[in-house]
Image (cartoon, rainbow, N blue to C red; front, side, top):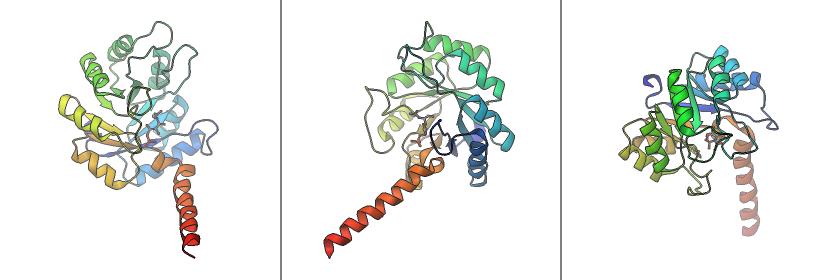
Length: 230
Ligand SMILES: CC(=O)N[C@H](C=O)[C@@H](O)[C@H](O)[C@H](O)COP(=O)(O)O
């Protein structure tokens, strides 16, 4: 935790079907993020974590996104994914810390107990303050606002959930990481000013198709405006 304090964590993820999918590419992306000053990397899948650990000196926060038929929870839903990430060398593991139903009989409580018994630091991905309070009471290491906007009962915002960050910083005694839809350096400054312990930026750094889209959309908008002025 000391290593990531007040720093930028680069989330380097590409799912199957995305142009940059593949561990070699994600390892290069992580190297670029390290060169740019990131203090840690957040990565998806044991393969990517392994490749990134070899490529950079930085701590790696691992997740496994996996769909199960009987659950909406897809970020590290079960102990199986925890085992894969530990084997791959993850320094911390992020899990869905909502109270939604997990696969089979697994609960958030059994996940946290299992991970604590293995002494692996836990980042609890939350979508509401109440989830943060509950996760903290179970003994997680930190919370991250990852899931705000991605559960049916959390607000759907364009940018980061500043309200959640502010409230969580105020109410919790464990570190609060700001994550989700942070697009601009000024937003990094803003969430740190609100008391975030560290900041995770993903798409704005490591999804070039989305980065390109912002610029291409701006070009299209400009053309429409200019034509209108003719
Ligand atoms: C909701 C969900 O599944 N979030 C994932 C969690 O790891 C990633 O797809 C995001 O890229 C990451 O949270 C960073 O957020 P943003 O890409 O907005 O900077």
